[in-house]
Each structure stands twice: as C-alpha cells, then as structure tokens.
Image 1 (tube, rainbow, N blue to C red):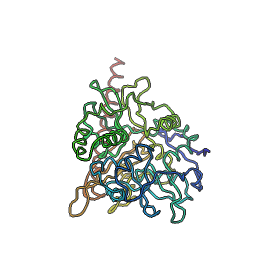
Image 2: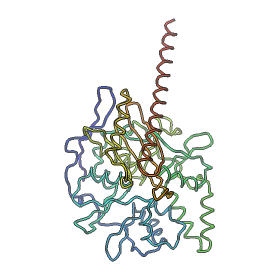
Image 3: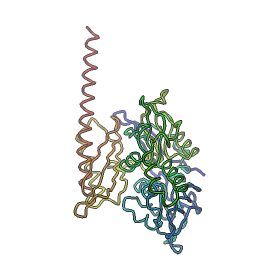
Image 4: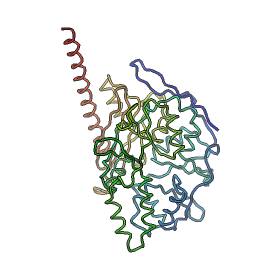
Length: 413
C-alpha cells in the first residue's frame, strides 16, 4: 500500500526551488499499516559474538535487546563497529555506549512525518513501536520510504542531495576510514583512484562484514592481532566496485527504488555523462529529512542527536541561523540541518561536542563545523565557521560577476 503525499516543487520570487507540502501532508495513521512485528532480537546477556552472527545472517537495520521480555534498546551496525575489540562484551553493555544514538520510541498511533523526523534526529534506521508500554513491533526507514514512494517523483535528487562530501583514496587504511565515518557521522565514503576518479565506495556495512568474517576465522588468542591487521588494510581491499551512481536530474523516487532494490543506504551522485566525478551523495536519511520539510513561519531546522542539547535549545539554534540568513539577504535559506556528535573527551565533566551545520540555499549548499565543550560552544564555533564560508562564497561570486562584466566590456571593444 502506498500513500500519496502532496509534495510539489514551486518557485520563490527569487526563482529558487523550494519544497512545498500540503497542509495535511500525512495526517494521523496507525503505524501497524507499515510497521512489522518481525524483527531481530537478542537477550541482554548475549555475548557480542551472537550479535555479530545475527547481523551477518539476517542483515537487520538493528537488533532489539530485551531482558525477561522487556525492551531495553536497539544495537546498530555502527555500535558493532565501535565495539569489535571487546569480544566478551554483553549486549546490554552496548546500550550504555554514550557515543551511540538511541533508537526513538514511537507510539503505534503516529503520523509518518513525525516518525521520519524522529529517525533523522536520532540518526537511526529503526524505531521500536509501542502500544501503551508494550513493544508492539518496529518501523524502519525502508518501511517509511516504501509507503511514501509514489509521491517522491515530485522531487529531484538535486533538491536534497549533499554536496559536502568526504572522500578517501584507495590506499587509505581501514582504520582511518573508520575514524572518518565516526567523526563525520556518515555511513559511506566515495573512494578515488590515483587519478582522482571515482573507483569504489566503502560503507559501515562493508567494514562490519569484514570484521565479522575475520573474527569468525580467528581463535580467541589471535583476535587482537587480527584486528590490527584489518585496520592496516587498504580500503581498496574492502570497497564495493563498480559504484551505483545517480545524476542530480533523476527523481528521488528513482533513487529510492534503486536503493531499496539493491539494499543500499545511499547512492553516489555524479554529473550527467560523467560517472567518474563525485558531485555528492544522496542517502535514505536525506529523503526522510525532505519528508519533514514544512511551510512554517520560521526557518525549517532539523537537528540530529537532539538529546545532546543541554545548554542550548532548538529555538536558540533556529534564531542563530535565521540571523545569518537575515544578514545575507541575497541568500535565501531553504532548509538547515544541524548535527551534534559527542566525543569521549571531557573538561570538568562537560563532553567535547562537534557540531556540523549545513544550509541548503538558493546559492547552493553552505556548511560549517566546530567543536567545543558543551553543545552551545560547539554550535557557536560552527556558526563562526559557517559565516566565514558564506562570506568567502560571496567573495567568489563577486569576483565571477566582475570577471563576467569585464569580458562583456572587452567583447564590445
């Protein structure tokens, strides 16, 4: 069953394409229509080896952890990658990992826009569905995308993909790749050959897969050495090639159909007729984020890992970004995404927080990253970087406009 969303494109006075949603985009619905009661589950006292084997054999979006039939939490592949050295770790210990997002709990009577928002803000592919205080089932990002698929032809990949992409060379080590995936909060990295052309892609799933296979082969005493060997391998040895790509002009529906068909979390975006140049990445999370866009009076701001907001509020974040948008009136901000990530380092009990801000504007994408102790310090450091990047981009545009004017005058001579 598919639900038709009133998602259309329209033009602002400046000519910029924005995303328009119907007043009653999704309405209330019973999640039983798309949620599933079949899910991977382990007991809290199960060892990490069992958790690995479930991921390898069933490839779930996440594994539900229970104790005496009571829900405790969800383990994801990202957590498994962080914890691969502690082979005797119990499943319950992974749920106390402060660096990992918590899967959001959703009531069985929820609308899809709210579910999409919660999945994005928790940086999760899965949400447990509750009826009263009892676990009823789960809903995954795939469930949401399959349900809304018929409406996604109203958007093009160009409307939602991320241009700010981290890439790696073929000879980069797996250890470095794992650090990049963690620090940037992404699940895939395009891999470039010595000529700078796209030659492959490496994902969290690829790395978990190679770790699981290696741990299965190694005996207990050999495992530390096996892990060191894996971390020193070049990414070329584990990357996927050839790469599944999509162009900016393809519809989001086409992109999602290909992701669902191949069980990919995202696709590399390349220019039309040039599949060797990386223009960006489009992921299922980008699509979920688009489903949450609204036509509210205030700027639409999406916050990932919202539970890290201790000394700063969502309103503070929105107001700060609105100030930037107001300061540069020739730049129309269409959407803002702010992502927080907590490091293990602390100062007097306050964690080091990294903040990444990404603005989608009618002048292209603008981004800024910063770190500080506490969410507010991390955010305002990122704001400073963002403003510098905006000013630099304005200067580049001014230079290009001057160059154009000069060439036109020379042509008139």
